[in-house]
Length: 94
Image 1 (cartoon, rainbow, N blue to C red):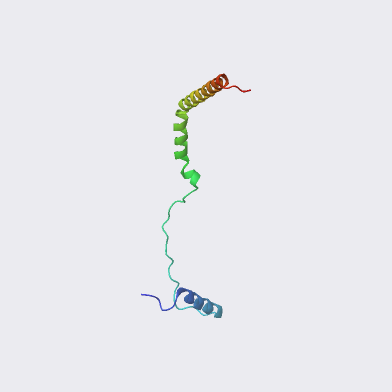
Image 2: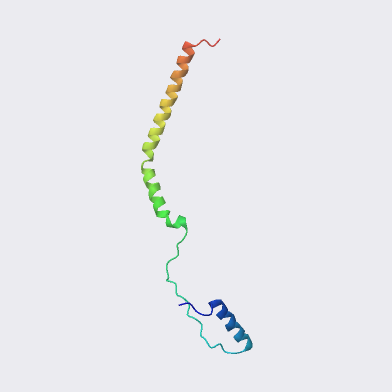
């Protein structure tokens, strides 16, 4: 069931009555209570525990990753040197 007078119009009438010094006959409608809930907080605060856990796991795997990286670089460097030597032996530059 809809009110016959909109809340905005009712507030205007109440304000006019107050300005004239007359008591408004209708009481104010009770306000709707919102449920209390904790603040959401900042994203970095909410995800801090997950981020620290991920960092810890990655740091445990770091020695293996470093070893793998160094082996790959060594293999690449050896391959480049071998390619350069074979190029210099087979091709006449001048």
